[in-house]
Length: 272
Image 1 (cartoon, rainbow, N blue to C red):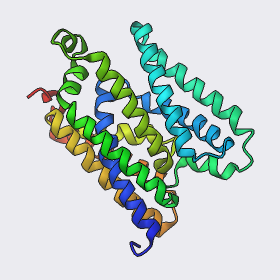
Image 2: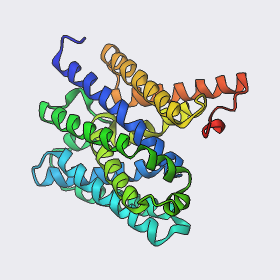
Image 3: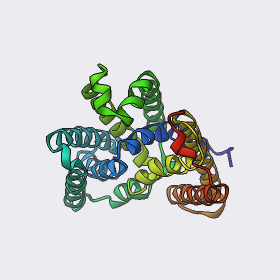
């Protein structure tokens, strides 16, 4: 299996995404924005369609659309803080609308459809380089602002009073979330990236006892589901993105059952 270059690229990119996606997912889940990934993934589809129409690399179009959508979501959240979830619904609707209209002008529908469910085994060398650079940047920013992100996630107003630059951090998070979704849509698929962002973290929250161990567990689960998903998709001819997500769902339910059996309070001890 690994003697083929396309599988080597798939495993390498899959491992990178398995590290950075749960990191971003940890923040947006604790901020009660678990559907943000879904909104950005739909926005990425409109960017893909726009990129294909202009004969660009679709990944570039997805990146630009996700960044605009991420900033738009953050702007709307500030304007209507009491109904912040509306911002996600608006951006999702906008992304779906643009994607639907623009897709009708695309002659090569295959390229567009590959972003719906992902095509990790068909990524080019240029895309591998782009994903690697972005992954390193996202991981660096996450580690650099780790303490600030932790504080904001649990008590945004308290962080603001303590002098944490909340607006600046939220802006940076919106950007790196958009970047992460844009590159992951090419591999896992735009329709599934939200699940891949949320499920490993949700599974980890069932068994971990602190914020740090929750992230580590989430990364571990994401890596396991990615490696096993790629292996199964190779030998049984399955769609990699869907296989990875289904395995993540399986891990989540296993942890839920395990937690109910041992009666652990797990994530409620997160502040320890």
